[in-house]
Image 1 (tube, rainbow, N blue to C red):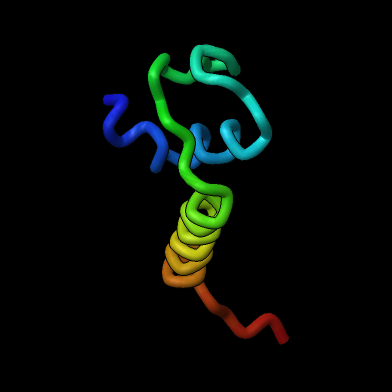
Image 2: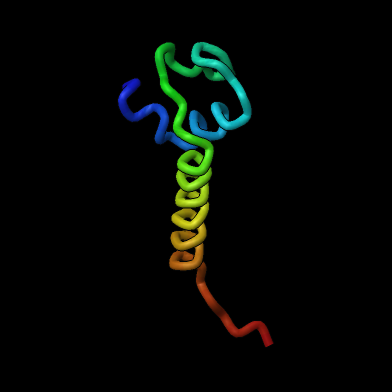
Length: 65
């Protein structure tokens, strides 16, 4: 689990915010090496883009006039 932990959105955001390994709620696994700040930002941006794409694809478009 700790191999992929830095790439998970919560862990990336928490480590960017300065939470140390073992801290946070839920706790970040001990021994996790944080990603560099730009890489963590890219992980979070990627998740946001993915969620926006899924939302746009699943939204039903209707004429409301």
